[in-house]
Length: 289
Image (cartoon, rainbow, N blue to C red):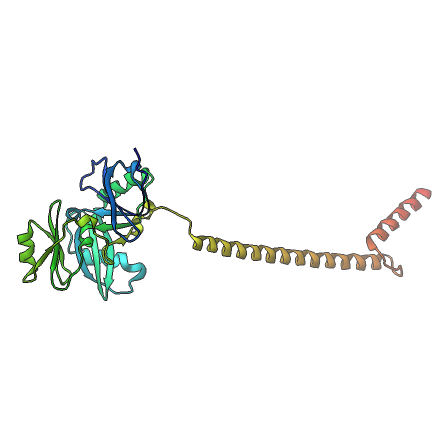
């Protein structure tokens, strides 16, 4: 049975395997506080104003890349070049998800493209269109004097005071990797509100999985194009009318000149009708003769 709840934010935990049928979900209030949680088939998930997909830590790797702050449309190619020597295996199955930029440092999440696309395809077929992606790492709060960590499927994820993130086998290993700063465990990581650095919009290559809603900018652009088309059509019609008018004036001038040459001294009122009258008179004269 489909839940009757509606949430300002719905977080869906995407399983690491491809053979799932149900999805765990968490519903949040407008203040980003956990309101409810459950598990349902994709078509029976609660409705929401926004939807984010939680990516399990064991399916995502974290990279901090030195990239220009204003990369613009070249961001994807710059990320691909920076990851070239870091990643092994089939590069065509790699999806890089740009995260937050701080100065020249860009946080980038990397996962298997086919795995994520299969999950998103199941959701969109059920009429569920996500707005953004949230790796479990991204839910770890950043603290200046402690390493935050949480136990998840596959190990213990951690975030150091300097922003380094990773996954370890247990808390002892996470503590050893974090140095002398203390560990601060997070009891329910999946229920944590998304920090500013934690989520990322869907990459351009996954835009077909996003909900294509009404965009006022597209309407304005269509209006501008329609106005330009109307002006050009009016201008073309005006030019064509002026050309016809010019041709008509030129033809009338030639007719008057021809009539004046054929019938010198005859006042010209309407040369065409006068010409026809002269032709009829000539034919009648020939008949009398």
